Image (tube, rainbow, N blue to C red):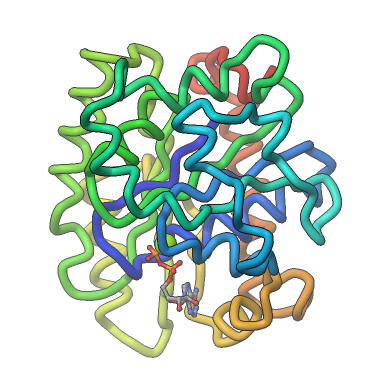
Length: 267
Ligand code: ADP
Ligand code: MG
């Protein structure tokens, strides 16, 4: 179970959630995407339109419905999704009053019979904040994947995120790992991209994935058509790079036993 988190907006969380989930599904892994951002971009990007959003991750968090009842197939074989429903916008505030507010998503996903056990990968797309929704994702997940946009100030705020991950590990979820950082929107013609990449690698070492996601117009076009880039233009650099990222993730999980860890995500 992987949370895509970075409190900055526009860094590629949603794009990575959609396209990495699609690539993992394409490798034959039964996968699930949970859209935990009230903006619902992951739902839109997977072609789930508004009239299908009456039930979704809000119901999951409030325990109004089970995952079994909420997960719906997408246009990608092997990939199901729980969309962001219209109520999710209020959840950040409602959660404050709820019992075991940090564990709501974890309890829903770890439900014995109607939980995430049926999936090999669960990707959770987080909103651009470190509020209770993101906290719920971190408490539920085995690992965090942090997309970093190759732009000015990319690393700004990452230390705060890393501290949050440490705090969640101590207080709520001892198994939580920082799986890695993914460089997104890399532009070969822009020196700044190289600088940001070099900076990130010198700071985080091999926690930065070797695979770099290039800036590729096909990726954003695909999203506006409600499709993963792989279904829009399978030979684009965007589609190929997310396939590579999925392969690298699989290799990492397979290599370090400690990294793989247990956890229902890989059950
Ligand atoms: P976040 O979820 O972190 O807010 P998004 O994934 O929604 O960020 O990305 C922000 C915007 O950038 C979106 O319009 C998306 O289509 C675009 N985008 C993301 N990654 C790429 C890329 N590699 N190449 C081109 N556009 C991208
Ligand atoms: Mg997003």
